[in-house]
Image 1 (cartoon, rainbow, N blue to C red):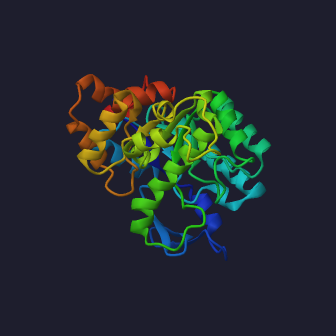
Image 2: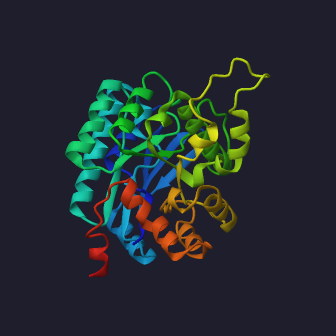
Image 3: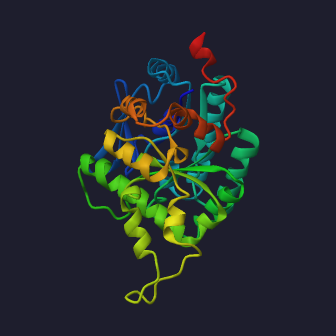
Length: 333
């Protein structure tokens, strides 16, 4: 079974709402979708399949993917701020709940949170889990420029962890970023911001609550800097003011899960060697970049067949608590 835990679907209603705004983010319509301006010199062209469930299903069938866990792409509703952010997060979650109910066994979904008000966000966490049946929560690497350890953000993440729900930590525009090209933003700034967000959460003690956190794009740069982080995470004389962690940094990094969105065999093999098969979850980032590559690389990963099946679907089924009894049924009919 192949479960794509990193697959994007945008709300057309949300993009319509962004049309005509005089501040970023803003959208404009074109012949086949929307061009969404997220930051100076950083825009995204949204068209099928990211706007159309039937086209996405056709792409899934062509790639042999049984089930996709859907999430919005940039911009997330939190960029609106305040009540608007919370209302649009709830509306997007309602839309995803309708889609997953209409396609049992083919779709699950990560819920969005607006973080406009902590109490409203916590209530939305409970609604998504107890009423909508969504899989877990997409958490951006910063919340409209606020770090994840901000006092109005961290309590929400602690509540998610205490509920035992999974989080997919996805990159967004780094806070205070200078204008940069899309290639530099996507290729370097996004993985770096993901990595910093994870380290900030470790520093808060969130990882002592045993959260299920899946870092996008092979965990950013964390697998490659694991030993360096472990060394500098220890108390040492040159840094007398360094706050202590309850456990060594390396143990916290061992708790991290990552998705397999990558574009070369060496990075995937390195993460497999560093983290082991139990920490990798198959993802494609559909429809961005070259979504067929992660599956092709995983097919060639030098691991056992049991481990390959674990990465392709078993880990997601267990950690995201997916009911996959009917997964892929409509694809096989």
